[in-house]
Image (tube, rainbow, N blue to C red; front, top):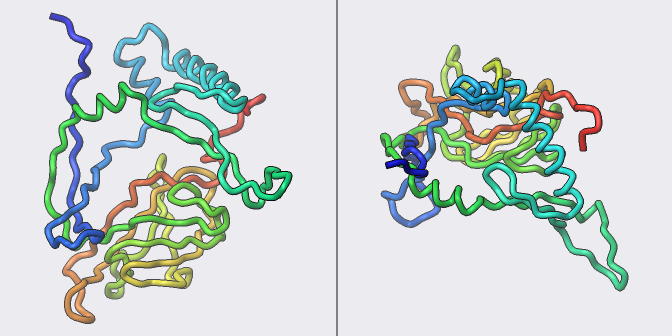
Length: 260
């Protein structure tokens, strides 16, 4: 009998100690991401699967829908698009007897919540729990000081502050250690020179962001730092990726005429 139920999908991941609780056996689950899919990728995959439209036609249709959705969203409508319901809002206080929008303290923000059907689908995803990665360095969050954005934007030449666990850069001469920005499309790596690190602690780090070209990047950390006896190192370099995609400039996408 035919069914509209989505096919079961699975995600895998590793465990790292959760430092925010009092228990020693609480862990956070870190998804192992299998790919980074752009809209162009999705259109190509859909075409290969047997869509009656070509990848180029699918992308053109998507772009047309996106432009209309943006026009409605930016005009004050709530818009259902993709996985979420979207609306614009205004952050920051408006003060005084005649309050006005002040760009110095107020900003227009995007507010998104998962659609009901997506929430239902999430409950059907099978979670495969992997090994406990006790000693892996883990980046918990980053802030681009120039823009004030967290876990989203990078400003080349500006300062980046981050928090984590076991992220102190330590090792021996010749070890491939440090922070690396990895281009999400080409996998090209840009290493952060040690001279650009202004703070290098186990739970906090600060650095000057390299002169990255427009595009999207992942931040990775590689170290032999150990939480054991003072001065000891783990046997091998351990490297992990911060899962958030970080954008420089326009993300490497060319603006289309008339784009909002």
